[in-house]
Length: 292
Image 1: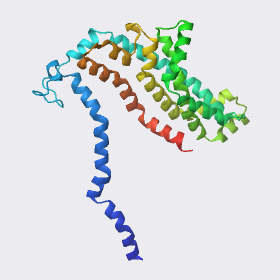
Image 2: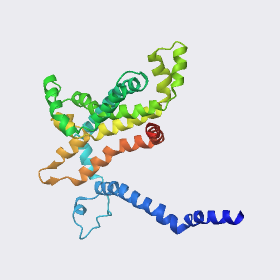
Image 3: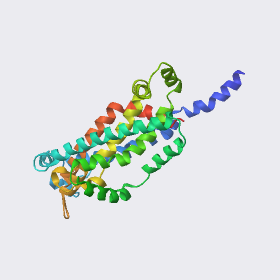
Image 4: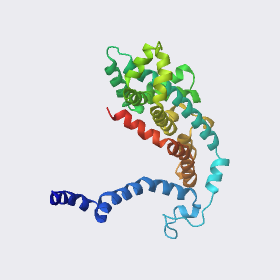
């Protein structure tokens, strides 16, 4: 028996050798990290490069910067409407996320817990609505925005963004609500609680990781959205960061690369900070949503 145990453990010991770990684990991770982080590195060094180093690759390395400068960020913050773009992006992203979460919670709870005919089909149709490309939806939405009279306002984005946020958030919360034991709700019903009380006092406190995950997704998608913001906003002061940086810092064939990269770098920081604080909740909620 001892010899057999030794023979069975030999392949495991061989897998744990350093060369094999380097080949199977460390090397793929290094490639993944490089591919993932290199664009951010390039964006960061371009944001602080002097103008004479941006295209002069004969005398300067494209992968490093000599004598970094903050002139591009100074130009972006004090000579453009970037602070207003950032403020517009924050307002639109937060408002549309709140609306999407509120509607998604009600829809997901109704589909998963209120047993009615066609609930599963309804859930499937809601998720399929997420697969419709925004490039198809923005044409009828543009007609509605013009007819309602909210064109060129933040309200146009706040009301149209939930059209693509609600379907995915609903699907995500459906999976998380499904993981909550139904016996908890049955006990609350026996004690005389209403459906609204069950939702607010039993289900939602247990679904906080799922809510955070759906909120992160909705906020990120709203923050980076481009097509609707480009179509429904025309004045410079009402633009969001993705549209403002592209349309105001590209003048014909002149690209303000330093300011462009500075705008992209500053615009990505809120999302990075958001993910860094709630990454544990995000992972746990995604696990709960897909484990079924």
